[in-house]
Length: 223
View 1 (tube, rainbow, N blue to C red):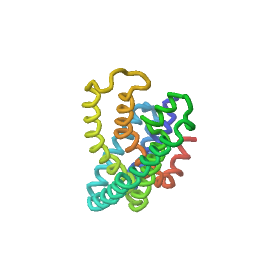
View 2 (view 1 turned 90 degrees about the vertical axis):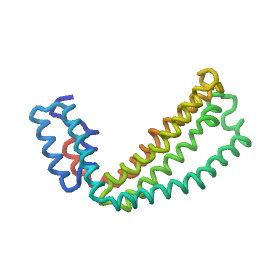
View 3 (view 1 turned 45 degrees about the horizontal axis):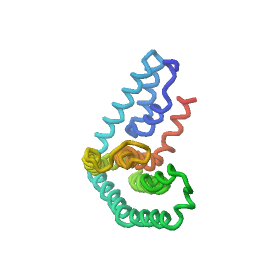
View 4 (view 1 turned 135 degrees about the vertical axis):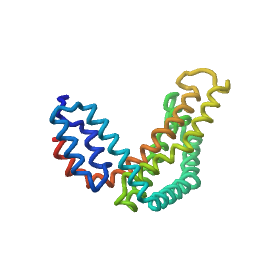
């Protein structure tokens, strides 16, 4: 990659997450310095710093909106965990009991993916989380980046406790071995979902609302 060519991902994040009132000038200034000889890594560091500083200032200036967004988001999360989650789990177990042999036949790998990992149902759950992120962002459209990122970050609080409990379980001798069929891999998988995939789904769903604001700026530098 030439040093004067802006990284598409960093540029896309900048035009969507930079402070709204300074977005166009910040994008123009950073791209201009990149073309004048600054390195791509310098550009990425500046993008990260700009986003973090803007996020902190945005949330600090709109505390009540942030609290309202968190209340709305976590209310939706409670509905999912208390109502939709058990429904998904019951559907999963019903299909396992009645149609398991048809769904995966003699394949042990497919059986493990269904029983231990629940991949089809995790996909549904991730889509629901994206919808929650979209809902929170849609009701706070003028403050989308800060609101959505803070909400996604709060998911790391229960995820951290879950990861610590999974670590405790992994240190026991309940599931010896580390083969494909080992339940330990499933525990690690659950930890990664909670720490990485679920917050990322909230971000993806929420920041989709910022796409239209940044598309015009993205088209220029990325072409």
